[in-house]
Image (cartoon, rainbow, N blue to C red; front, side, top):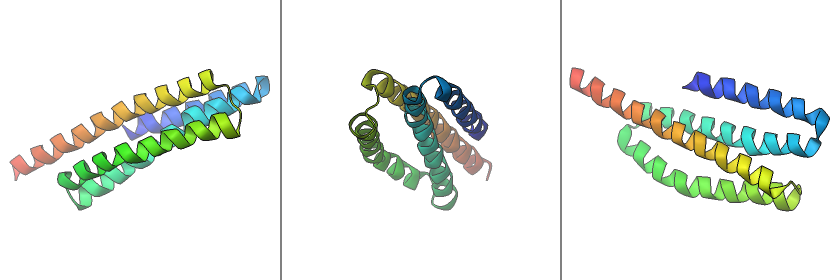
Length: 126
């Protein structure tokens, strides 16, 4: 799963750099709308790994509930930054931001579900 994050981050950087010569606004939309949510999601799975290894699945559930608040604040903040402060085109920026966030949010859910299954499988072996 982490390889998917690494490769997608590299691909997003390359696409952002390719668009930089054509349009700095589109390049910035790609960087902020795709790269930042990807990095935020990667940070979340690293935290989920840490919590699962050190505290167990119950604490991971608590962290997942806390993530709803964190991700809401993140999305509002990123929207404000992109549209109000940097004056990016709202339709492109919000589409990139929301679709990237959604894709990585789903991948986080599957990743967490796999961690739960591994934990249960390891408990049954013991």
